[in-house]
Length: 206
Image (cartoon, rainbow, N blue to C red):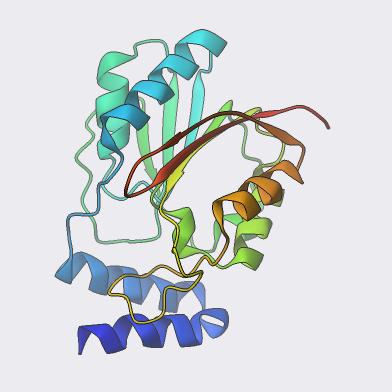
């Protein structure tokens, strides 16, 4: 039954409204509440980047319960704010730092009218939940942000069909890098593990 839920989501993804996507996110929280996969290596790289480049304002996409923000803010005192744009309306926050905000939106980030004034855009295990078209819409929305930090898994076969997860992105790592670079970024650093890859980009054009 659970496999049917994931494959049905992939089959209907392009037709789902924001509210319907939220319904799937609620279901995910009820059945798989532990969705924090950022790891120590990614945390340390984010902290190091913020300290080196004096990045004070952080936007996180799909930060679930705010655990990444919690551990980074605990070790980095110079960050002024950390906004987590998370689609699941029912997941509780574990981050109690006053600089952290769980941003409840009523539409996809790329459809928001507000200006996203941040120094760093970070996303850990969330971009794989987007189609390539929606990834491009998201990147276009945040393309003015100077630094990007991503961590995500890739499908070895190029398809997530038949897997028990809400993953849909069908880009290879090389295609992913090419897509990000097309928005004016250069790859500064990458790391590879058996489960995911880490990418850090810097904006080089306007």
